[in-house]
Length: 113
Image (cartoon, rainbow, N blue to C red):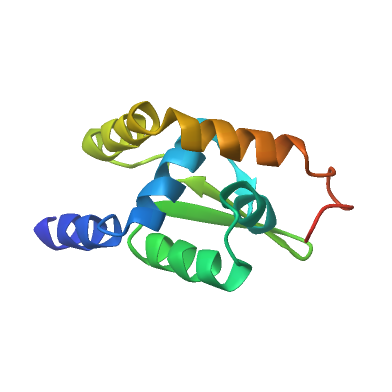
């Protein structure tokens, strides 16, 4: 148990992964291309961060064709869900920009995937 918590804390020690945590908490399931568009970050960088989060058990994935969708693990402890809410509360402008970026995307399959 302590080892898993340690892995999760280390995974959340990066500002980009905290931002991903907040975005996924606010928006639910997102494709990796939606995440890159929302956060205005390159796909390889976001995929690396998402891989670390997946290894730590923070996110789960679903593959649909060529697209990989990420969502927060439904079995996360309460403290991680509270942290996600705190990220959103502390950075409402970032979530607003990410939401605007998502709205400007074309729907699947025409979007950037």
